Length: 132
Image (cartoon, rainbow, N blue to C red; front, side):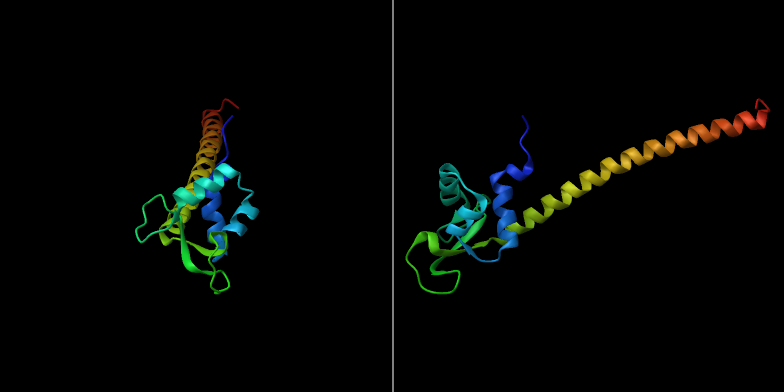
């Protein structure tokens, strides 16, 4: 069974971050219904914890402040934001999906136009030759 793109964890995280400018890990967990394994994956692979980010990182965490700007020591309460590269890749992905959908529609419209042009061209030939 093929999984939908909407089920992809990376896609869900980036879309959530794109729609929510600042949020904390608890919000992310609750709103995306993350499983324990997904929580671990997000913490270990997708959140920048040091100074250097890699292409795998999607979110950056504020080291001392929560989403309301108050000091906090708890990891789950620290503010998270999407990295600009993650938003850029998300927008590219959405545009690519739209382009594919438009290309499929154009393909079928072209075939319909060819079909009708063949029918009307054939009718013109038949009428011109007096067969009808």
